[in-house]
Image (cartoon, rainbow, N blue to C red):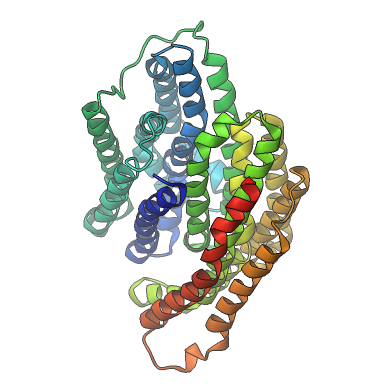
Length: 487
């Protein structure tokens, strides 16, 4: 399968997953409302859902290079060795989440009321098994990636989202946040079961494990790679945790609105960045120590990230008002919450190009096992988030979103300097800017608001028209950029 064809199918599957994820984010607030109970749910989901899902998605970055090297050296049994260490760790952390729930909740959201605090503690204990389920799913997904079956894991991921969505409507309406939490556990079981059945059909045992062996030659390599992923994620999600910490001080419903707005503005960029990076992963793993080739590949990645980052930023900024008003029609939003959500989304959108480029380029550090750079940029992100959140807290949720955007651009420029990056050839940069300008002119130059059409129709026409104008001018040069850099 060619690179562009693989990218098309992978982005298509991930887009389906992301779309379902959007629906979940929307309907959680629509069904449950933007209130303190929903805030408690988002706090409880941080470790057993959000953090471990990110670990699971990045586990192939650690395991695929190790599996490759192991098989090249005639060690044909690396998977059971790894799971022998991984499974006990997952069980220990799951138990920690259960017994330490009161302390963890207080640390994550000190602004919750006593009722919200009690709800968050109970939900965290209910959701704790998800940590184990996502952990073993990440191991299974790494086996599929090693065997170059990159597309199939998107199917069980979709099964998780579909089950979560059904649970929200069926159990969420009937039993509130507790019914939805139980549904998420069921979704985790179904997700792994789908992957397990496919793996078994291919002759792979995803649950086969051996007794932990300290003499296993790849243990240090696994630990080093895993440490990189954990450090990167902990530092990355610490920024999100800081945002929620400050949001908990802004009143009931603030965490829910911040979560929804960030999901709307940032999920698509991260999705596209991850999709493209997944396709680059095998090549990156094979040339990790060849500096000249790595520099060329970074430039190619940056070019494609910018090509997709600019239109997404423009499109979501323009669409923010209609998106939120469509949700508000069916959800439990006050007028003040609607206005706040629109502004927060637009502030987040201004950082999309920086977010998508930084996310892709920082993943290269994981492949290179460069813990120094990961730690440095992670600490810079945390420090900037903390300082800017505090400085802009007076603006409310808009201040937290603006702080996130400023941080994203500062980190991007520091990465640019540190990696000694250069721009693509001038004619390609001009083409990207012209394509973006045409899209801007179409979306902001026409009097969309004066036309008496339904917001949903206006949203669809604007998105299709804007993307069409951008694509017809940018697609011809995308392959030229890749060829030019390769040569």
